[in-house]
Length: 64
Image 1 (spheres, helix red, strand yellow):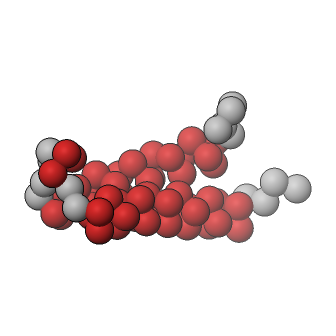
Image 2: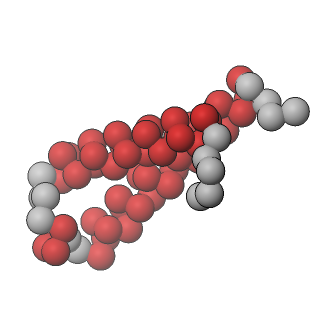
């Protein structure tokens, strides 16, 4: 993402927090020992959180 706007920057923060919470939930900080399913779940959590945040942000503050 080149030159993210405020909503995108905030969405990245929200996604980071969600990803961190997921890591804490599974209790495995050594990423080299993660299963394929754990990696897929982390990606899903992060992408979903990012998209959900942006969807709400733009609903509240449309870019047009």
